Image (tube, rainbow, N blue to C red; front, side, top):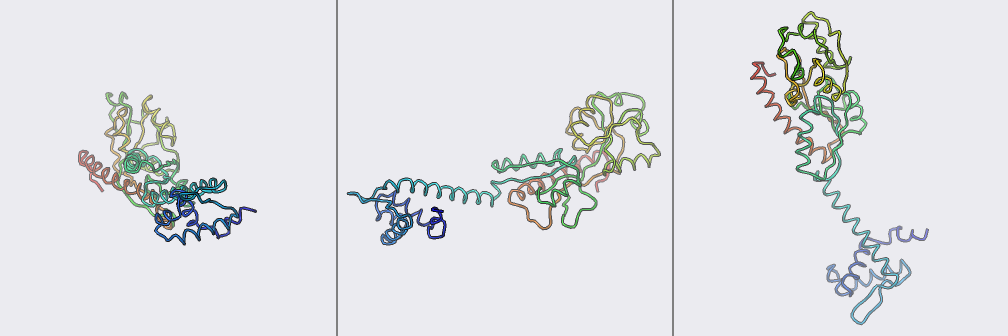
Length: 322
């Protein structure tokens, strides 16, 4: 190809800088001064480019030089190339400092209520040009996406075991509480709020083979009670909340979701045996990008605040904090 002559290594970036300097300054002398080099170096560089192109880029005028019909278009292209390189350099610098880039985070129920939204809000306040992509999924699905590199980190309930290529960091504990809508008859009824009494109402249960489902089953078994016969099983938080506020169902929610929702009330039914650890999961063999590291910093800060808040609630409920 004809254009290969510009791509075979003979044309240097310094040539483009030199040509644009000549165009800007109007003389070889002033171009040399602006670049802090000697005029012979400028003259030699101009000759190298003109020899490479086979055309004259500048013509002598009474008070300097001016672009020829070939020089004008070439100079504009050179300016564009240099502008793109400066933009690329600035973009890399911003990415290195965590001010630009994309962080992709996976989450599920225990992480998406307060911890992650608060951390994202703080991150965007510091770095408004960062893009945050949030993907929801089951813990197993998120682990696979993390291993494949499709996620930078995950936020949510920590798993009892993870693949050897992943590591977990606990940020706070979060108890599980039974809840009902604010106008639910259980709040004014005479049946009480024991687990046995609550079997008179429909329930929303986690689907089978989830950690919370197994823990709730263990609570019912310990109390010598069957699972609610009238129940809906789902993993969708939107579906769960819609049913919760519009019907008389009972549901088990992470405490901070329940506390933050004015349309539901926490029941005094004890579930002290269910207390989840919430944190982040990261790949061991891949250092966080600057953008991911910035989000991780805010997750740790918000996790510390939620841990303090959980201790306050635990004290108020006279329950020990572990």
